[in-house]
Length: 127
Image (cartoon, rainbow, N blue to C red):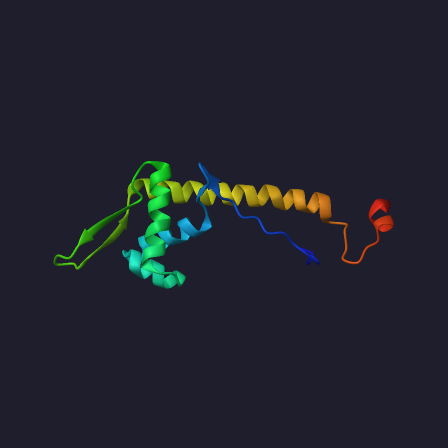
């Protein structure tokens, strides 16, 4: 595949009364699933626990379902797990993102494959 002189960036976010689900929420949820801890997920992302909790709580309010479940103390020391719905939403979001990326890649190639940096307007019209 030929190296492009320039590229694009696509970021998908779901909206309902404002943005509530996108790459940041998905990453926090994935890390909670991996580490079993919202605190560990927040640390891994370089954000405060409070911010991570607010992001998840906002998404939960918009979906009107819990995305994480927490247990306090006990023999295993407590922790946070993904709710089953969160696993489905992560999978759907990532599939949607991959499909959109593929479509936008094709559109980008269609509209910009022959455009070069520094090209004059006349050269652009020649194509």
